[in-house]
Image (cartoon, rainbow, N blue to C red; front, side, top):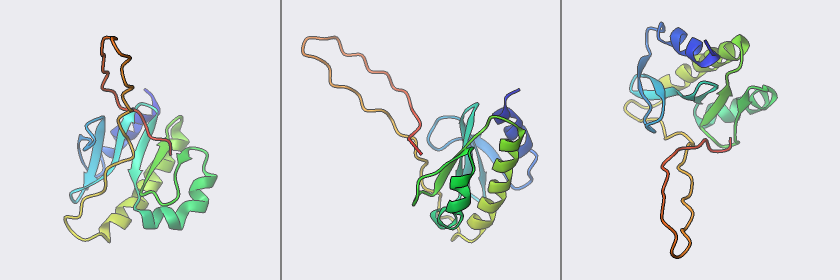
Length: 140
């Protein structure tokens, strides 16, 4: 079992989290009080909604953590899941995220994650058009 399924199994035991499909339509997500807080697009990473305030406050520590990908000003971070220590890091940051979201106004949804659809190249004149609809992670 890889780290992401272990993290998902642990999160399913947390009493205030609800599991379901991710709002961005790829992967499994967990929400609390109507706010999507973490989701898994793959078996090797998790996107976590910390809020931009928390990211700004924790930015020096987040940049120091080798398993975290973050962009200054972002509200979502990515935790790379390679081992049990990364799962524990995710769970600790999830605790911070839950406290941050507890301070949000009710019914204010989390913003969408940073995943985006890749640009579709323009077909050459006379070439058959083939569109592949796949998602890719945005550089964090």
